[in-house]
Figure 1 (cartoon, rainbow, N blue to C red):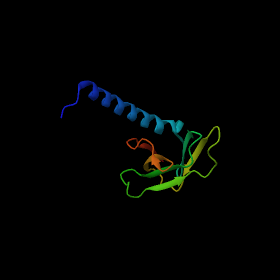
Figure 2 (figure 1 turned 120 degrees about the vertical axis):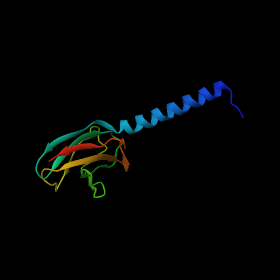
Figure 3 (figure 1 turned 90 degrees about the vertical axis):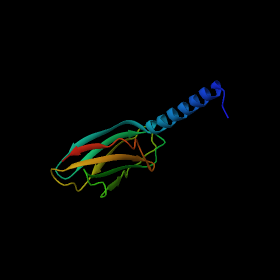
Length: 120
């Protein structure tokens, strides 16, 4: 069964709008950042600001090329305020080691294809 051309165009436009809305929803959770803060021999800090609706923020990190050994650090401060700039410290790092990390907000990885890196 063939659909008229205007129905196909309408379906494409609806799909495009839904995809844009989904991306904007995930992006809207982060107001600013993430940004790498200080990096020392044994720890590093990740800074970001999140939306007022966010309830939980985590950083998932691992030594580069060793994603099977992930560590999750959850932000322990108060959220859901008018402004929510936060710093999450990644502890117990090994010196002279490259790490990768992702941001997880309310249980969902923000930009699953985006992995950030730093080296101690």
